[in-house]
Image (tube, rainbow, N blue to C red):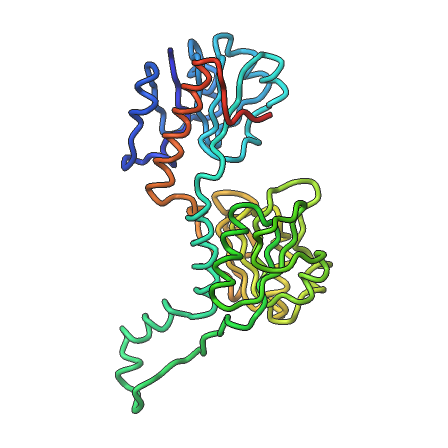
Length: 315
């Protein structure tokens, strides 16, 4: 079996192991593939694995030998699944591989906004504490989360994990989700209630027609003054211009995001010049065990397909 990996670098820059896939066939790994090179690299391929490389209808109908597509992620919007179905190509993904990592990152972003640890550490190293007459010194007081309200929009696996951490921190937890789950450590409420009552809002929903632009001028107006917003989901869930305006006015006290509307983020993005805005580079999912899990589950998906019992099929 000829197996091609079109954009392997983000998943494996060299610190995880492709061998589970290599046991199933001859593997060609490309760190990155320009759109102009996709068709050429799929010639003769029986199976292909992609992360962000797009496989459209033209590509899929041109790859005559292709029988299997594995997405090295959970989201599979880069694949024309309708065209794949017409071709009889099985498409699989890797569900829930990074729950713990993304939840940890969401809380890290929140604590970064509340504790100002890096700022104070930098000041201490520059002598600011040494110069003080008192044993304790700070420039920006930390924000105490205990007793405040955390609003979770999207209570799937990651949202549920964040909710449980917030509960452990002594926060009141509110949630909005299409399907209520009995083990949610808080109260399910309508979206307007969550927006109105939350001190912190954390986004954990996929980008769909009813969630794209969810955080915009109209919904921001319904929030508490001085709210914190965390986004470890998708950049398209927020209007970045409206968030910039709310940060500038102080309506939003802080916005911390691991995602952007265009990635890599563009210098023209208004968030790049917004006050009280923390931006990380879509790396919440990247602890080494998470990336090895992607490869391991991807190999399991291909092995299941070869045995005639495909799993984690999408589309």
